[in-house]
Length: 480
Image: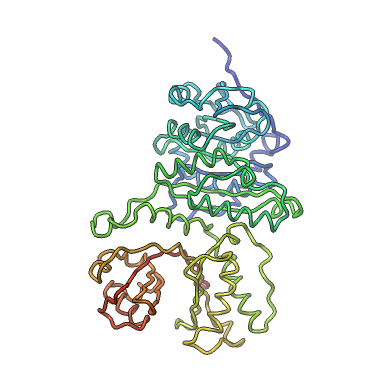
């Protein structure tokens, strides 16, 4: 009986601990420290994770693997695609081995299965040498061993290949819920902290919108990422940003940093409006991308956005409060927000932006100050009131047109509890309601009547040139 061909660990002891006990404890600790996935979060069909040393990018990778771990009894095969850093290759290469070894043991390679699936894919090849010393795939395996256990893997390295070619490889290996795709990539390299945060924010915005291609100054794994973005458009996958930071956040050195992000890609849920023809007719593809832009924020974004809003108001009122010390990449991406203030359950101010024209963190800062001091419906907030006020920050998706030629069309197309609405009623009258307003006005007729009044137009009218747009929001609240 012939012995198995095993690809031995190349970077154990450098990128991650070489001692099996230390490695196990390190990975387990990273997974335990990662934010717990929200209730009902699906098991991802694909993820993007970084591949630096665990001391630098381990916390970011762990956020994705913590979500993957929910699929421990579902996922049996993992397709891993990383970039080549050492030995170039033309196309996308399998390793030509039976197993990969780490200090935690071996995982079998589904080489024969993959070669059969890829037989008619021109870009696929077998080239062991490009895998021999490459770290981009290897560093993912200990996380898989602890999060999923004994799964089969299909490790591949993308060299000189187009995004379409990588997407064809991924498409050929696509399966059901038993198959997970892991794309390995860091973001920008060796920029100063603030410059890197800005560059990475733009890259994250592109990924969130499935807007490739990326270039290799944005991400060393641009080639596999570009393939995933194309696959996501083909397969209707929706990206969610799970974490973003850089090595300056983990190592403390902010002069020359490397950026990291973690994304989950989930299958788009069946739209609630699918059974209603009047609703399903509108902007299906745009709605998926639109939703992805909102979902790209991390689950704990409020831990930064809410204190930022409160500190901005405090400074405006002459109280001592510094700006946020943390400015992660996602917060520097363009974003549109509304800041709502309530006092004892009553509205105390609400100001926002409908279009993303500046970094989200700046938008929240300015809108918080405006809600506190420039909402014409209320007197400016005082220092004494600040402690009694609760803050809500809503981040808006890009508005999309709502096809409607009259009120009956609009009533049928709106999604109560989901859609925020912008009403342009003739050349001069414009108003918006956030989705939260549905809580007080749950019927479309009532909702639009009050929106019309807010815009200064009599309910029931449809002025010439009327145009409606909708958007969705992610909202974070103090005291809830």
